[in-house]
Image (cartoon, helix red, strand yellow):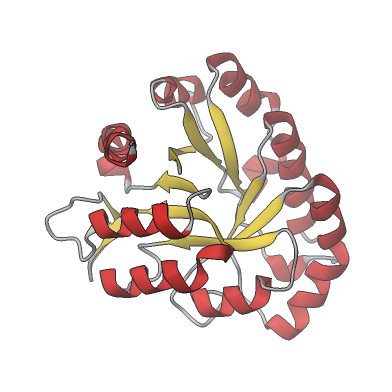
Amino acid sequence: MRVGIRCAYGPDFWGRVSPCVELGQIELAFYRVEDFLSLNPRRAIVPIKILGVKAPSIHLAQAEVSDIGKNDGKFLPVFFKSLDIAVQLGARLLVVHPTKGKVSKISPLIDDYLAAILEALEITLCWETFSGRRRFIGPVETIAKFVKDRPFQAICYDTAHVGESTARVLADAENYGELIKVWHLSNWNERQRHLPLSHPEGVLKFEPILAAIQQYTPDSVVTLEYLKPFHHLLLRDALRIIRMMSP
């Protein structure tokens, strides 16, 4: 089980990556589409390489998937630029938000435009879980159905997004473990998402969840993702997980 923390590209990226040397792993994340498309990729790649940090997963900037194939669509430019960064960093996992739309309309676009290149590069597109039904896929069961027969597509399971109990997360790990390649770990309650794992008001208990991850998805990538006020706890908590899971 590989453990890292979310590291979003932005100002002072060297300063963001440097503390991660001790941990050795990040998920490189991008957000605003316009900022990403104007970015010189070397600004993100060079600090990671020089500092010797691994980035096995890359989180795509949040373009609309339904725009695939449109002349002014942003998803394909984001996707191909992300692929280039992934190849240069040796990343094998791309995390993407499923956006609005109907699965009957979007799935042929994914099959026609993305499937062959994912297979050729042996890079897996991991669709991130969400609890709402507005997205073309979102709940873990809909993503599982979508990716089951699509090579090089998988699940990114976000424990805060699904908004479920510890028991439900454990059941999902058992039922869908073979399809989950990335975990985004954080706690949640009715008021907030992406709280620290041990937050006193958090719904989830992570000792059994971590045990289930190790049992059912031992080769997955685990990324801690907290709200900004709790960023100072990310490295500490990731190192604790590594110590806890070590033989």
